[in-house]
Length: 188
Image (cartoon, rainbow, N blue to C red):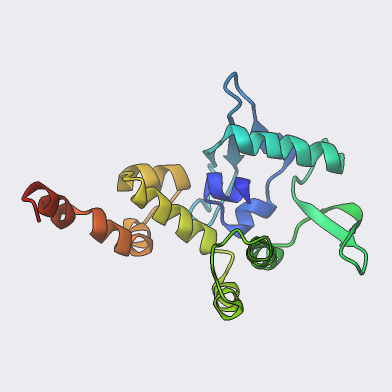
């Protein structure tokens, strides 16, 4: 989840990450991920994306626990009937697994009471709405809320079409746009 958020990764990009695509950590603990190809980079020129120090630590913990030295970073996991881990495979995680993982994470966050006061029906609606693209939408919205510029958001998360990013952040952009700033200046 940390890698997906830092990078704003599409599911195809997440499952394509190999250990040698990760560079770092640097002196501050941050790293970089080389994304060799993506939906918007069919020529395969590749792009670089930032990995936070917390993400680099999480990657190191995962690699150590799973004994991953090379090859795919995210792998299929065999589980017992009770959900405990039987073995970590060598094969790449399947792209269709990403949505299922996101849905499980929302359910676990709810079970641990990390989502605030929500009813079972509300969390069920959230879970049914989650897709593999939800994280990319959320990272765009978070960047708009943090008042990042459109060009900076597009560059950081490898978007080519500003219309897509603006659509994801339309409600937040309206709340922080010219009319909102003008209302503050003139005392509403």
